[in-house]
Image (cartoon, rainbow over all chains, first blue to last red; front, side):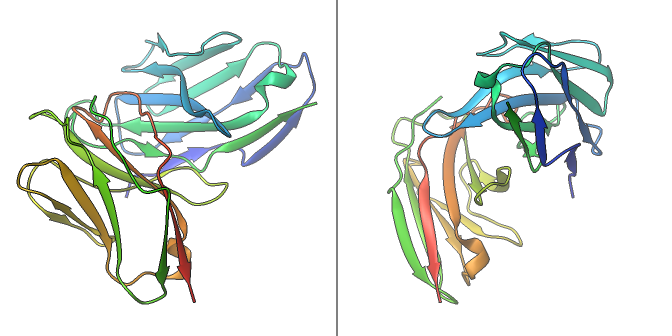
Length: 114
Length: 110
C-alpha cells in the first residue's frame, strides 16, 4: 500500500514565524503535490513537483515555497506565517510512469496561525 | 476535465449495500472515473478508478455504464466507518491536480 506521511497532524504557530511542513512517500512516486483545504473552497493546489529539484506553482503559491531535494520528500514552507494561512494542508503523490494511476494523500496537517 | 454531478447526501443502513451515483455526461474517451472519500478531519482516501470496464477491489466496486455517461460506486456492506463525503472525479490523468466538487455525504446508520 502507498504510504504518504505528513510530519504533524496538528500544528500551532505564531504570525511571522517560518513554518515547515514535511511530506514523505514510500512508493518511489515521481509526482508530489501540496494542497490546502478550506470550508466552502474545496481543494486548492499550492505547488507541485514532477521530479527531484523541480517545482511548479499551483493556483495559490503566494506566501509559500517548496523544496524537493530527494524524490521521497516534498516540503512546504510558509515564509512568514499569517493568520489567513490557517488551514488543513494536504500532501499527495502519484506515479509519473503510469499517469492514469491515482494520487494518494497523507492524513493532513491542520495548521493554526495565531 | 469533464464535470460531475452527485446527489448532496444519502443514507444507508449498516450492513446494506451503499450505491452512490455520479453523472459525467461530457466525459471524453481518454478520461478515467476516480472515486475518493474523505472522513471528517482526515485526508482524502483513494477508493477506485476505471475507464470503461467495471472494476472491483477490496473496498468497493465501480460500475460504469456502456455509454460512460454515468457510474455507480458500490460499497457492498456499509459500516459506520464508511460515513464520509464521497467524491467522483473525471480526469485524463492521475497526475492532474485534483479538483473536488461538493461530493455526496453518505451517512451509514446503525
